[in-house]
Amino acid sequence: MMYYDQVSHRGRMAQTDEGHRIKGGLKCPKEISTEKGLDNWSKFFPHTKFIITTRHPVLWFQSFYNYHAYGQWPKPVPHPNELIGSCYDESPYLCTDHCGTERPGNTKICTNRANFHHSLSRLGKTPMNTPEELRLIDHDMSIVPQAGKVFLMEISQLFPENEASKNLPEDISNFLDLKYDLHPLKARHGTGTHNHEYKDEERKQAFVDICEAQYTPVREVLIQQGKDAAEWITKYLMKSEDVVVSSPREFIKLLDKWGEDPCESK
Image 1: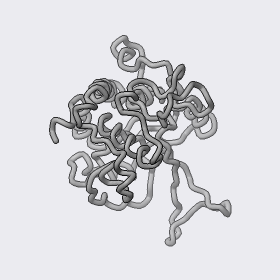
Image 2: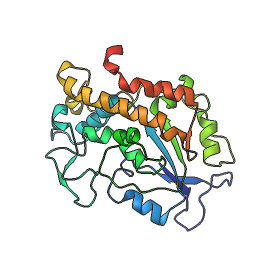
Image 3: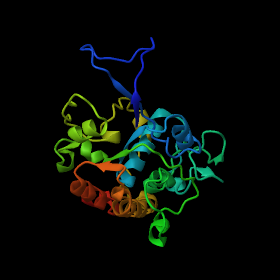
C-alpha cells in the first residue's frame, strides 16, 4: 500500500466529520512486481511511503488461488502443480503491457510471484554487493531505488492476539506521521479463504486445500522460496534504515515459519 495526501472530488483535502485531514493510499499488491510500477512511483511520487504485507508463501498461494477460482467460476483455474514457475513466458514481471506471453488460464497465479524477496529487492534498500545476497535475489527484474521508507509486516500481525501485533497500531501511526491514534486491531477469524465472505457454495467447489498430498510438489517449491525470502529479509532488508518493522524479534519468529510446511502443524 502506498500512502499520500488524499484529495476529495472537489479538489480539497479530504477530512473526517471532526475536520481532521485524511491521509489516503493506493492498495495494489502487484505494484512492485510489474515492469513499470516502480518507475512511475519513482518519477511522479518519489517520496511515497510503502506499507507492504507479506505472509507464508504456501498460505498466500492457497488464498490467491481460491480467490481467483471463486471469482472466475465456472472457468477453471489450472491445477496448482501446473502453476510452478513464472506467470509469463519470456518475462520475469507481472506484465501490464504485453511484456510477455501469459500462460493459458494462469490468471496471474504462479509460484514465482511468491518470491517476495525478489520484488522487495527492487526497492533498492540493500547493498547487493556480496555473492551471498545476490544468490538469494537472483532475478532479471530491474532495480528501481525508492526514496520513500518501507513499513514491512507479516499478515499474522493483524491478529491482536499475536505477540507480534502488540505495537503495530502505534508503529504504523508513527511511520505515517499521524496526529491521531489508530483504532485497536479487531479480532479476526482466519485469513484468505476462511476470512473472506465467500457465500456461493457452488463457486466454492473450485477451492483447493493446499495441504492435500497431490499438491506436495507446489508446496515444496513455495517452502524453499519462503526459506530464501526469510533469510534475505532478516539478514539484509531489515538492516536498512529505510525499513521499519514492528516488534522485530516477534516478526522474525513469524518469518522463521516460512521455511516450514504449515500443513504439518494442522
